[in-house]
Length: 95
Image 1 (cartoon, rainbow, N blue to C red):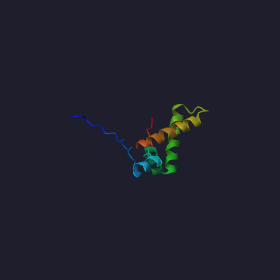
Image 2: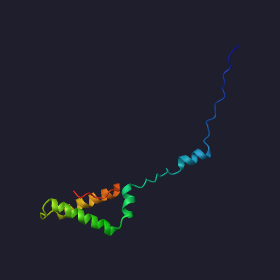
Image 3: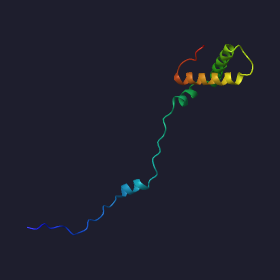
Image 4: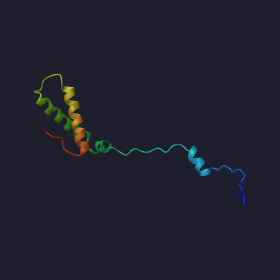
């Protein structure tokens, strides 16, 4: 007996409306999770934060014997140290 082959062409698969809509829809945006620094900042009074930074800046200046010309660097270093400590949830150290 001879094998019979089908000569009828296959119809292409039709895409459904759901997959077409998914192809044309805008990509989904992923909302980033809140970082700890975003959460910690509103939890402290700005005046209290400033007082912590001022105290830390004083201690940094004291370690360098209050030499002139580095006040801005002292403040910025103190600000970074206080913000890091607040983000991590620990009190700034008095080194």
